[in-house]
Length: 89
Image 1 (cartoon, rainbow, N blue to C red):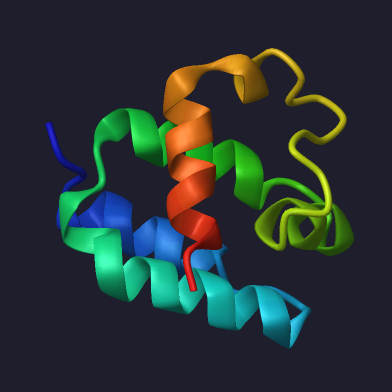
Image 2 (image 1 turned 90 degrees about the horizontal axis):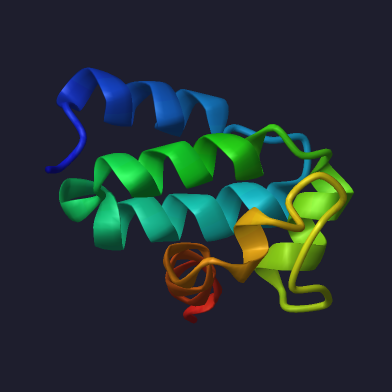
């Protein structure tokens, strides 16, 4: 099941960050995958977007594979797949 327009709009709004680099990566991600995001993807993105900007940047550019508070989620295949899509250039 894919996200509703309202859920997608909320995620896009939450994705506006203080670091321009995060904004650009997230904007590109939503342009590519926004229409096909599942409810599970939405839940994982909500967790990611709750991170501090620098922690999120570390995940997005591949400096780290997990962040404090996401240790359990980072082991799931769906998290790894989402992170891989976020990191695509």
